Structure formats: structure tokens, C-alpha cells
Length: 217
Image (cartoon, rainbow, N blue to C red; front, side, top):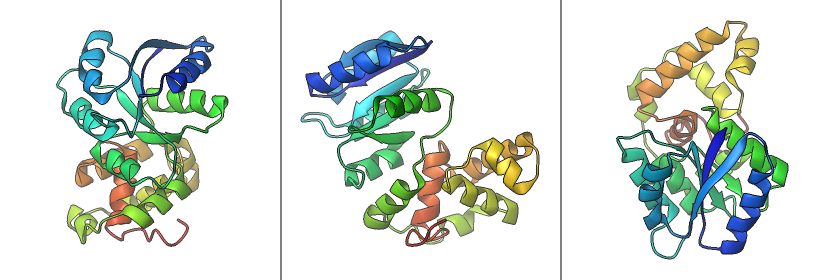
């Protein structure tokens, strides 16, 4: 059972998300909050696997709340940001803060359910075109950050494939190697970049110029 907490200042949005997710046999909505200030306490109490969090809230926004969750010593849930606009600069900051991915509020019910399952399984929710456009418009250069990380040629190749949104199994087929080998490469990339997950690694790749956000991966 995937345990979920909903955080949005609009009650109607929370009600809609609850109706969609509670209809699934493998998902349970444990609780709701209307502001980011309520999130740390709610997470400690309920121990959810995934937090669906609005990026913009009147008191404590989703970015600040995400930073609190990422810094917690206890088991930390995966954070899936909710936004109205795909190119929202707040979403960019949320990804940097440690959010696993983002989802548009106008997403179809099936997309919302799949997104929750994806992040609950430990994968990042990457929409390659959306992340590329977001970084192109909001990104701030990190210069030679990746060059200093010392990625091998194969690790760089794996990072580019991750940026295309490929799963480990798909990368393995592309490179004609085993899935465990890909997992090792991905783990090395995250460690060298100091990235919490695949999303942060991809953002770093775009920011540093390792991948040009103006061109398809």
C-alpha cells in the first residue's frame, strides 16, 4: 500500500486528488494539510511514502516545506510537486530543494496515479521536454560543476540517457549491458554530483552546460 499525504491550500484540489487516489487499491491517502508549515509534523505522525505538495502556498510554500523534509533524520517521503504552469520558476527551485518531480494540476487522473506509483517505487518523475524547458528559462549556470565531478565517459553517457527519461532497463538495452551495471553507473553519477536522485542529477547536467537545454537530448 502506497501511503500519501496531500498538501494544497485549495480544499477543492485536495478533494479531487483524494477521490482519484482513494479509488486505487494500492494507494491510501493518510491525511491532508493546507499549508507547508503543517507538513513536517504530519509526516512525522503519519510516515507517508509520498507527499503531493502544492508549490505555491500563502504562508509556507512547497519549496520551504520540501527543504524541511529533505533535512529530516527520520524516514523521508518522496515529494511530488503540484503546479499550474510547467515553466514555473518555483518548480525549478523545488527540484533543487530535493523534490523528486513535478506534476501539472491539469494532469489526467491516470497520470496522477502513475506519477504517485513511480515516485513511490523510488524513481524520479522526469518529463524530459518539460525539465529541459524549465532549466533553459530558469536555470542558473554552475560552470564546471560536472567537470570537477570526474564522470567517466560511460557515466556521462548514462547521465544523458537518464535526461531522456529512460529507465534503468531501457538504458541497459540501449547500451547492451546488464541492469545491475546501469544501477551501478547511476549510483556513481549521483554520488559524484552530490545529487539526491535522478532529477537533481539531470538539473545539474543542464545547469553546468554538460547537456545543452536548447537542444533535444
